[in-house]
Length: 71
Image (cartoon, rainbow, N blue to C red; front, side):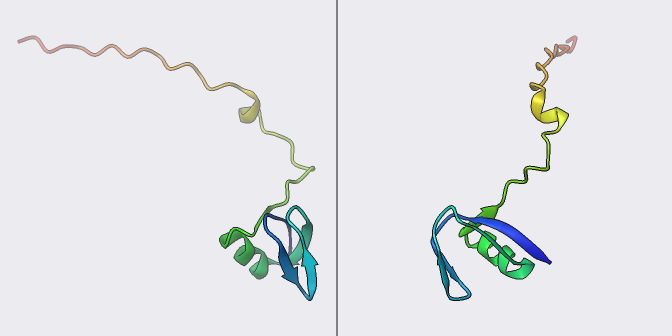
């Protein structure tokens, strides 16, 4: 399976030199390795749309009233 990544550092793959910001398609194992060493980031997918949760602001915290013991 192939993985599409955006390079975060210069990299040489299959004898070709790539610069930071270049997009490459590599095998999953190599992709995981590049991600683990910080040389690449997942390519943002244009197909994915933001979920509803990303559009909604976080709910306001509700006040919590603590009951004091009767002593």
